[in-house]
Amino acid sequence: MASGTAGFSGIAERYATALYDLGADAKALDSTAKDLRDLQAMIVGSADLQLLIRSPLMTREDQWKAIEGVLHKAKAGGLTRRFIGVVADNRRLFALPAIIERFLRLLAERRGELTAEVTTANKLSGKQQAALAGVLKKELGAKVAIELNVEPAILGGLIVKVGSRMFDSSLQTKLQRMQIAMKGIG
Image (cartoon, rainbow, N blue to C red; front, side):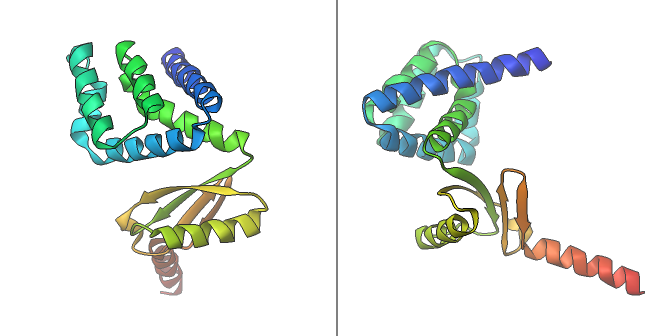
């Protein structure tokens, strides 16, 4: 099992590094990152798209036609389309989420950015994300890229993870603490 996981992460690493190098040469890192974030959001939000990239039953051509349609609709740039075409041609679409994640991490690392995983009950607006990034930059002393996750179960507030540090101001956690405190009283 471990060797399969190592092989999978090795695939993601190689493809992400190749895409980073291509994007740097073409001076298209920002546009490629935007394309990949958009695609990542589509994959997370669509069970059909997840099935498409993971299905071993679909032919390479059918997978490529379908993903090409998705990329066209998303108005992805030429570099992103060509790269994902190579990934599809090599029957590696199953690794696409890991490739995207690794590319975005590599980009942040090379730019000296930290990545904050932020979980909220509702989607944050662009203004709210910018304000949060500003606060995190001030607190951490570095530019911070935000990976936003929406989890209605936290009810309200934020959970912010940066590296091994975590700040949890979610309503769910506050209610759990209150419940524990009340059990201690009774």
